Every structure is written in C-alpha cells, then in structure tokens.
Length: 306
Image 1 (cartoon, rainbow, N blue to C red):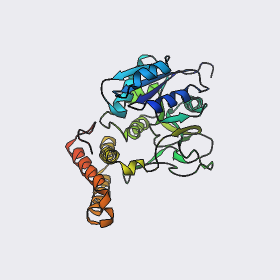
Image 2: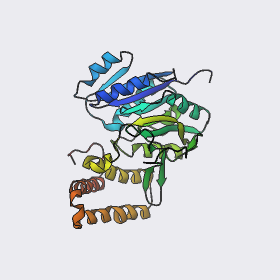
Image 3: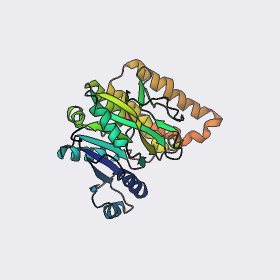
Image 4: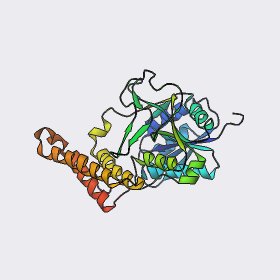
C-alpha cells in the first residue's frame, strides 16, 4: 500500500482505568503508523479521564455524561471518525492487549478484498494465552443461535493463516470500513450491550459486504472463562437481546417457537422445579425480566438491576 489508510481506534472506557491504560500502552507498540487513538469515556466515576489525559496526552478523549453502553458509546466514536474522514474505525475493548502487527494485518486483509467491509482478529483469553475465545462468529438461522467459533479450544493452527469469511466478528475488536457505516448506519442503540455486533454484521452482509476473520491478527481479551454464566445482568442482556436480534433480522415463526418454547420455556421450567438448579434463581429471575421487557419493547439500558 503506497498510502496507508487512516484508522480511528475507538476505545470505550467505563470505570476501567487500569485496563484502558494497559490497552493504550499495547496500542502504542503497533507497527501500523496511520492511526489515531480515541477514548470515549462513558460517564466514569473512578477519575479515569484526567489520568488518561496525563499519561497519554496525544490521545483524544471524549466524555459522555452517562453510561451509553457499548452501542451508544461506540457510536460517539464512529461519528467522530466519520467527521474526520477516516477510512476505517476500529472498535476495541479496553480490556484487550494487542500483538504489534494486529492492526496492519486487519487493514491488509480488507484492502486486499474489495468486497470485505468488516474484519476481526483471532481473540485469545488473556489468562490462557493459547486458548481461543473467538475465531469469528457463526449464526444458525434455523435455531436463532449465534456463537463464537473455536470458543475454549487451544490454537493448533486449525484456522490456517488465510483470512476467511464468517457470519460476524466479535465487537471486542472490530475493524469497519467507512463505506459500511455510511451505507448501513451505526450500531443499533436498542441493544445497549451484547448481540449488537452480530446484528450490525448481518446488516453489512445483506448490503453486500463480506465479514472476514483474520487468524494471523492476534489479541488477548481479559474475559473470565465463566463470566457470562455467573452474572444475572449479563444473562439479562443476552436473553433479551437475542430476542431483539431475531426481531431486527426478521426471522420466521418457526425460529421464534424454537427459541421461546424449545429453549427459554424449557430452561425456566427446569430451573424452577429441579432441586439441583436452585442456585440458578438469580439467573431465572433475570431471564424472566428479560423476556417480559422484550415483550413490552423495553430496550436500551436495563432500568432495574437484574
């Protein structure tokens, strides 16, 4: 590439100072020079903003008055990137650490494929550096189900070295071409957090863009192995937003029957009547609230703690 495309790296911070500082330190070691770092602070109360500005004076920091979630916060960054005529935006979780060639490989993968619009790296667990968290994402449209490919498996080279097309890539590190945002719009802020990147990628694919996973581009994500299974709040968003994903993507009635009756109802009954699942009561309550809110069309930030 004679002139390297410019990338705005959007890092969302919400009371995560230590992680954000480590992420920015990792970002400073990239071998791709044509980028600018942008921290969008989502109403932090831990004193993050002045410390970030002091430690990284060349990094732009935008402050939101409240927590706008993954979708709202990143949309602030995306609008900034569009306004500054950037060729790409990279949405990057603040709890990630990057390989130095990570961004260069992502950009090269998209630039070499004119149909590609979104790209994502190989994501590993931070505490298990050889264990895959995501090698791209897949969607089973018959069951209304999405999942991370390669989740929890050691990297033995099974995904090769060549970028390959996938259904979606995780939002913890998502490179998007300017043309995609201009054509399909921003993230859907009804999601607040979880499932938003899958729906965004579906919109992009339906508009004719390819979504690619780049196995040679590597990052490490500070996510516990059982993080989602322990948290009622995460379970709330995952349950409710799966229903929003199905609604937004226009699935047929058979999928709704499978998800609501074949999965959700069966799980709720099991967690209610079987003694071995009594410890699941907080998750059951979160799930019931999520289904009720979806039925009422209550999206965005959950108003009551799950």
